Image 1: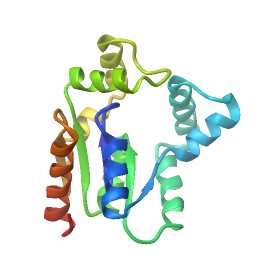
Image 2 (image 1 turned 30 degrees about the horizontal axis):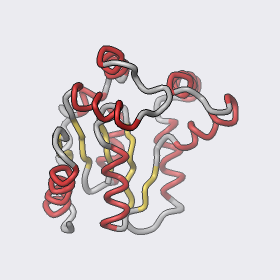
Image 3 (image 1 turned 90 degrees about the horizontal axis):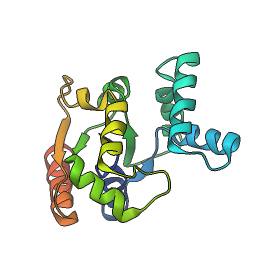
Length: 178
């Protein structure tokens, strides 16, 4: 299974729910990038991780993170959720190896309320900054319109019970569990 969507739309929350409730192993497509960034910068900012990823993609090709993910998948057995596909090529690849891709969407206002509640260092300071961040994520908006049969759009503007119910419905429909 794969999860995609803008920053603060609930990707980690859904991945943790799938792990805790349904026994999925959680895999981050970008964990090798985050590890490399920590090795280089100590505790890197989100923008430094982004810039490093962009530089690596330019040097080694856009499919670099797909390659890393494929190699990581070899170590896993059973149910797996990739929690952070961000680009069209990644989601297209995932759609070929996963039974279901969940595209999470929220209004910017709801997403920003989540950002304020969690209070992580480096998170957007205001709604305008969040909207700029979303604009910089570029391809995320176009993913929902890709010709992928196993992509389900899930609106995440309510409470956790509502979100989990929608995820369970998608699991029943596409994976036969939930």
